[in-house]
Image (cartoon, rainbow, N blue to C red; front, side, top):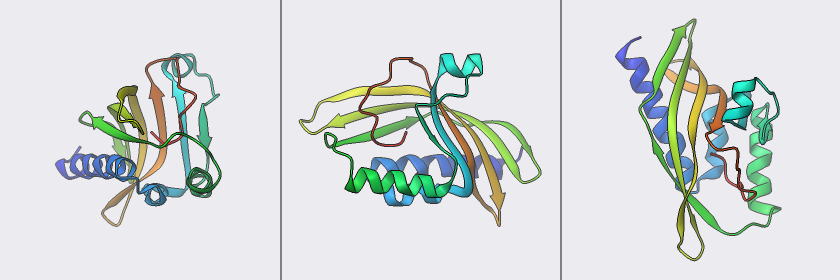
Amino acid sequence: MTDSVYQMIARAQAEYARCIDDDRLEEWPDHFHGSCVYRITTAANHREGLEGAIIFANSKGMLIDRVSALREANIYERQSYRHILGQPSILHEGNGEVRSETSFLVARIVQDGDTDIFATGRYLDLYRIEDGKVRLNERTVVCDSSRIDTLMALPL
């Protein structure tokens, strides 16, 4: 592993979280390649190898549709997130791809100002490196808890 790959992944992680935390959701799909996979699951399901996901998308178009639904169709309490990220661990690098794992904690801030810990877990990512830039091919969000809030509106 080279320091530059680590730095690219760390920068990509920070930009991803900032995009969501700053409510720039229209930019969120740009962190992914067109033929991407994005899923949110629980640690128990992941451990058992169960394919079911709380949220699943297998194209950038599906991510764009999700943002459109959040902005125009879905009704939910106004809220925002604040991501706290661990350092990425590079698990494998080769053939222009990088597998990494990064711990996260997401605090949710609701309209009345209350803040609570919304989710903890880890990102299991497959990045593709092209022209000196990295974008996600696959992100599996593995939540530590099996108790998932029904108000999971924003992407993790």
